[in-house]
Image (cartoon, rainbow over all chains, first blue to last red):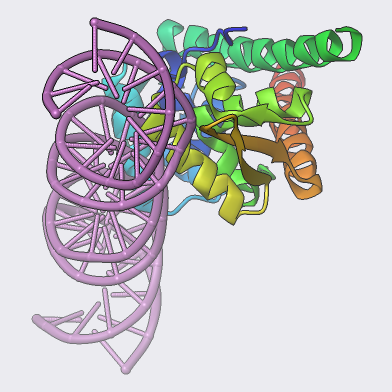
Length: 109
Length: 109
DNA sequence: CTAAACCAGTTTGCGGTACAAACCGGTTTA
DNA sequence: TAAACCGGTTTGTACCGCAAACTGGTTTAG
């Protein structure tokens, strides 16, 4: 029996840090850098580089502005990003289902 | 709001290849190397090294024997392995739930 | 006035890892 | 007896996640 599960399709989201980021963003239209850092517990450097990757992948869009005199970075999911996140959960659910199925086949056969 | 999600606890299983392996093993008492390779679609080298990692982690136990004249490697989940796999799914479920919760809070507030 | 602390991030350096190619000891086929 | 096959393991490399160091500006302290 051939397990159908494509690691490459959502490889980006298999990194826990990125999955956390996407999960938070999935719940807001937009969050800023500091909020994301608090929510995920990542270091600034770490968060920054993950966001760059997600941006390159087209999963988030990043807009910079000034609030008063301070720089501020807003991050939001793109449609592609939202789709990828859903897709990722679906794949995991599906893998788990396949495991259960296999188990039942074993029980019978 | 602080996301509670510990990447380190099940980092090993965040690798898709390893999650596939564990999923298959979760359904059998024991599987052999060739079966695992077919089921997961991994290359031999890749599978071998992932199994070594899982063994070091105490998640699988590996026993070697000869079938006729050919070497044969049987792999099975340990109790720790089974527990880790369940734990992993739980963590993912939990993260997703937290996302949904956040979303509902946003809808209200 | 200026130096030290703070803010909001980005870049850099490094240790670790996933992957396939090369390899290995043996067995079967030609 | 040599070439192909079997069941894996080891090696080399390119990539990646992480925190420390840095950047460019702002506020506080003396």
